[in-house]
Amino acid sequence: MESLIGLVNRIQRACTVLGDYGGGDNAFSSLWEALPSVAVVGGQSSGKSSVLESIVGRDFLPRGSGIVTRRPLVLQLHKTEDGDQEYAEFLHLPKRRLTDFSMVRKEIQDETDRVTGRTKQISPVPIHLSIYSPNVVNLTLIDLPGLTKVAVEGQPESIVQDIEAMVRSYVEKPNSIILAISPANQDIATSDAIKLAREVDPSGDRTFGVLTKLDLMDKGTNALDVLEGKSYRLQHPWVGIVNRSQADINKNVDMIVARRKEREYFATSPDYGHLASKMGSEYLAKLLSKHLESVIRARIPSITSLINKSIDELESEMDHLGRPIAVDAGAQLYTILELCRAFDRIFKEHLDGGRPGGDRIYGVFDNQLPAALRKLPFDRHLSLQNVRKVVSEADGYQPHLIAPEQGYRRLIEGALNYFRGPAEASVDAVHFVLKELVRKSIGETKELKRFPTLQAEIAAASNEALERFREDGRKTVVRLVDMESSYLTVEFFRRLPQEVEKGGNPAAAATNPDRYSEGHFRRIGSNVSSYVGMVSETLKNTIPKAVVYCQVREAKQSLLNHFYTQLGKKEAKQLLQLLDEDPALMERRQQCAKRLELYKAARDEVDSVSWAR
Ligand code: GDP
Ligand code: MG
View (cartoon, rainbow, N blue to C red):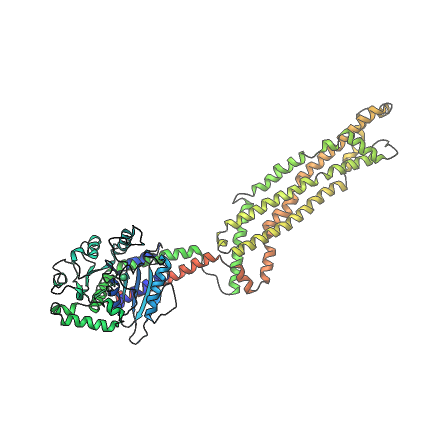
């Protein structure tokens, strides 16, 4: 009969460990919320904590006058096998089993103070406590701060409303069972507990009326009208309780003794003797447990569907997060290579045009390079003044006779040197485009996001490779330029003397050295200029070929080749390091896996329990 509650308790317990408990802002707190629990409601000092203690049969809660309970206490009772050691465990102190229950009380006080300070303030942050004992029934009970009417010294004015709002947040949930505590020595008409319970549960379906302090009633009065349901009618019968008085507590009267005394009180009471079997804390515990059982049974279908929905959500989150990494080195290497290939594929798509960016390389050849070539300072280099200077210096003491061979050579070599600039600039420009594409591709390789280390390594390896390609490209284009200046096209110059003759009569010109010389140098300048123009046209075509050959083609074919070789030499440990995931992500996957495990176990348990009958 207790198996269902035990099951729900276990699920709730597991949920709390994962932080999926009621009141949490966690998306998965819904399962917890769907499971019923019992909240204890009443005015301050009405005996709430005392009732909880007698249900547990253990002395472990801070009690007394004034505001003692200042944070919700979520108390989960787990029934264990007869003879098992009784112990308590706090959620905030995992793995610490407390067997001394006075330590439990102290920890509740300390933990309350940790959040609220040593004031009379309250906090809605619950304390979670589990008690494992053969002497309890499976139940989840929530002890709450008592309802008050006025703020006392040291409390903010809003405390009255704050407490009510907090209590209300627990009892207004339809799955909450309300244990409404009223002291018998006060008129039931003034009961805070009944007032609130009636508001949130008008039909009284989920309210259990508990009357405490029967022993403290004025002599000659009794609470029969209330206990028999004549004063205030509820769906469930009222239960009368006699807890330990403050004097008993001070004298350390044992709980077991107290329970016995309570039994005796009812058994021998002239007023309540006929109700004795339905009074007292032990009866209350059984009543609650039975009710909880039936509530849970009725809820099984909705709990099952909630669990299934959560499992679906978790499964899809798991897919999104990626499955855990393989353990053996071979599989790890395979994973790494797969990731590298995924990146490489995207990078190639950028180059080949499936994705944008590759067109910028053509932009370098089509715009940047021709523009740079046009801007070369040949005007200055082939100015009349400079041509004369270079030619004269090349002639030495004897001026040239027909064509200044040396002068031509020097002018041309000087001019061709200028081509190095645009050639190298093209190499660099393409290099930067490729680098940018690597960066983009890394970002676009979603599978890599999980592995920041590998991501960085691939980026570094790619950039290193691009650096090598750039160096090769640079050497090659410089060589192209050097080749142009190392051997001049003879054909071009063979044609020159005829042109000179066409230009006029050199003999006549010789009679006027100044004029001859100016026209002569101009012609030399223009000849060099047209040769240089021809070379420029050639380089405009060959530089792109060299750049594509050395850089683009290599990047496409062997960007990660070097990296692959290195990978092959790595040991298992190093491979694992590469697959070192983002810790936050690992944490999320672990959380997700734990939840999944919990929810699946819960589903199986719920299935087996619900089929058992
Ligand atoms: P809470 O503020 O509602 O949690 O009330 P407590 O459980 O702390 O009890 C307040 C005081 O009332 C304590 O001193 C208890 O000993 C005393 N008390 C509670 N119930 C009874 C009872 O049934 N009989 C007697 N004599 N004292 C009680
Ligand atoms: Mg209390």
